[in-house]
Image (cartoon, rainbow, N blue to C red; front, side):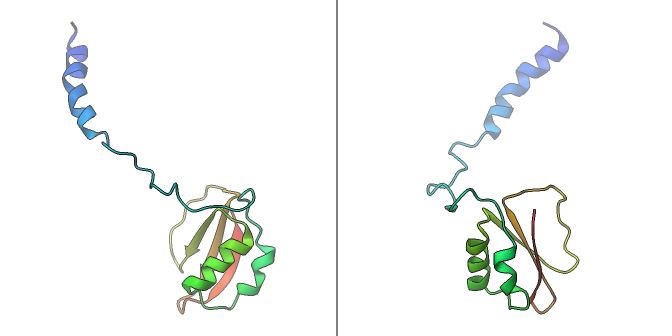
Length: 103
């Protein structure tokens, strides 16, 4: 047996020990999404200027139809991937909603 093959065989039990013993998915399966989960920012334009409380954010997510909500603080780094099911809620330093976009 070659040296690389011996190393691979020796490391296999260590890698198996890293595998989770239970499912990482929650028992509830995650949040329920109504509709197809596609984001629509227009119906939630009313929220611009509102304080981003937990209740306001939940209502915005529900009314937008988005599957995910991403609050974005000033100067916060974000990914540039486009997700049609994600609602981006930009807040200012006083936690007021200043802009809402999809993606």
